Image: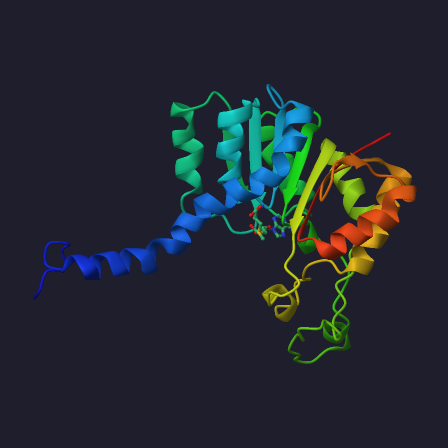
Length: 258
Ligand SMILES: C[S@@+](CC[C@H](N)C(=O)[O-])C[C@H]1O[C@@H](n2cnc3c(N)ncnc32)[C@H](O)[C@@H]1O
């Protein structure tokens, strides 16, 4: 049987394979750096040193970078699907940082499991900050109309058949049950196919949804906008903000109680 070693291959084959096979792996590490570039201004202002952070829908990589740069006390990441390297990051990060990092498979809507996690991780009271990066649009509590009618059904890309409503009052009330501040980052590409729509999981927010959410947030909370531009968000600034969002591809803001 031919042994499959690097030596047995020509250099060109080896280069080709490494480019094709490892590209996605590298992106696991490079995309979070790019995305953190849009969020760091919030961290700089908030000052995370010694603080506690709950990363909802974690990619298990951003917490390591955040720990190395900002030295928070603890970062707890929860997700529905923990990547295989999560345990290594949590364990081996001890060599590089004093920040405690822990990851758990847990649905943000599962209060009982969250309570167990907080106990296990020794979090008393609320987290100083909740980070919700590229995950807010998944937290939809509405029901699929078609599924409610019964029978088999395939989700349509335009979501006309199933409306996974996003209830900002409910979701932000839940955030403030667990944290003092909420840092939201969302990235959207209007030209890219959004597979979550086909899966019926609730795709990127539409401009109407952003408008409704930001209206609710700036009337009930203090909202500091960082992307597309840095300013304190008020109803007066909302029209201008929506125009900027329409032309951009990301938003980053911080919400806290007034
Ligand atoms: C698009 S990924 C974003 C990952 C990462 N935060 C980032 O910035 O790249 C969405 C993540 O949210 C997680 N997720 C979706 N719904 C969730 C829920 N209800 N509770 C916890 N995590 C959730 C998924 O498991 C997935 O890891």
